[in-house]
Length: 276
Image (cartoon, rainbow, N blue to C red; front, side, top):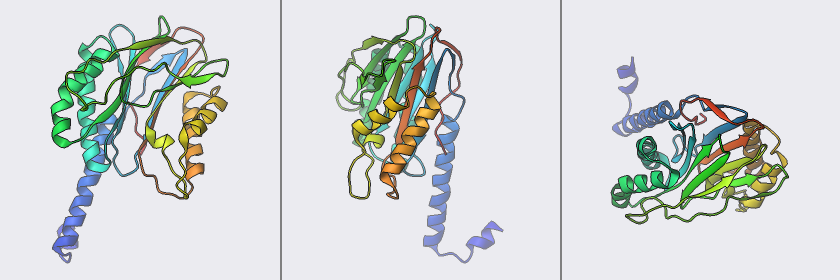
């Protein structure tokens, strides 16, 4: 049946259909690798979501439960879009998983990732921005390192919102032999940490106006009492209302961590979810 259906098509038409099948297969592979159950934590919540601008995307986020009971969180943005970015995203995922198994902290993890990926990224003329954090539920401390990525926002229980204290670091593929430093911050109950990629703040309406960070802060601050999935939905709705009918130009990705009253206990983990 399939051969008969293709028999009347030109070589160009057949090539297009073949490409469409390959793109769908690439999406299936990406979804297979990234879909799964997100970490379930007692007395706290963590969640992530990503909306690709095209059929497949180049944004990346992941969770990794460490043997010491900490939760390692990573979010990244590959330069470019579509299939090339998706391929580099898979490379980034592999480098993170490998480093997360053997490295003690976020700084060492990003250092190892840059060492592993630098040559390939330079060969391809690409780079990856990345933010990596370890959440320590026992001491309620978030330690983190940054490779040229957007600094996450933190909303305190008293409704104060700000960036996490900044820590510098060049993007993956930017410079060789880099050592990424770390910072840490104490979190209290009802605090919310919002990790994100620039597809949110750089979303544009029909007049070319950008969504921008202030609008994002307003939404998160107003909805910070919600659960993490509800906050995600409110951010997505706010962006969609802002851009209207303008097609999405960049991947939109976010991860939220919210602290509750009792000590957080990470009970299960598989891998992150990217929305279809």
